[in-house]
Length: 463
Image (cartoon, rainbow, N blue to C red; front, side):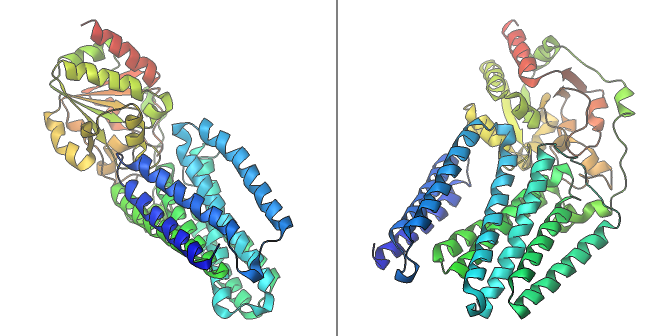
């Protein structure tokens, strides 16, 4: 393959990556965008096997190792991707981020060892940056995975003198980075990698469960920057382009998510050091609540003029999206105005609810963003909250110092009636009680969301 053809294929792959990002900006075009991105990655990967500078031609034994690694990756990834539940998508994204950052750091270390003392200042600087950010992305992503998978506590973990440990670790990272630049040795580079891995852990531990999606997005941006830097080390233009696109889009998404949570990124990452302790839900669980039956809920819905459905993580866990669409279709057929109120960070990743509802063929025009649906709640007869807790919790406005204080919420408390579908009185992912559960206007329907909605649909059909 000629150099010209190789460059043209690289340009085509870069254009496909840009078109993929454009497609992913809307639920209607997200599937097409994903396919375009995959096609771009395929072209970029295959082109490498048919072109290399003469001095870097791939020996057959190296080619066999590469093809073997690809085969192992396919064998592991394809079944895993097919079996992963929609509720586990954020965990999978976190692992993808971590693996990408770790791989870039390893490649930079290997290339550094290969170049030795012939490496120029710019190459060493790019290598140091890649190792630091890649290792932080890897270890930080592992911690986010453990939090989302609930293999460790989702609450902020504050170590004794935690903020000073983070500062000391950062100073050590910067000091060893200077050591690498000064002595050009492999040993200090490995020490730098170890300290960076530790910093990634300390960086993410203080983040509470409700903020983990923002950290995933930030680490995604880190991985993009790492890939771009490794592209400079390897003199691979396409890696620089792809990494820059991921870094830029991840940074923009992180900023938008932080705004949706109603606070600064710094406050999201380190706010746990200044928060006051919050009371748990054990005392509140003994307070009386008003519970109802599926028949009670069906009657409320049947005589409403407007219903706003607020989906949350509980909907995803129960895989109840098809049932809720059936219920909404029944209500619409009776002349009831039905809308879905979508919070920007509902679920555990941006667009989580949009994807679930699109899977059930819910009309896009019924999906209403938070800023548009909030003014309509005073005219809403019934707000049906399905597994969402933190995104409707009034504590975000009334309780300074709580983990979600300042976060814009869906103001369902302004609706005429509120129906909460919950498995139990357990607090949401942020770990704080929701006073809305004890509001006289609120009726709780306990149980699995899909089973409960199926009973509601049956009761509606009987009215």
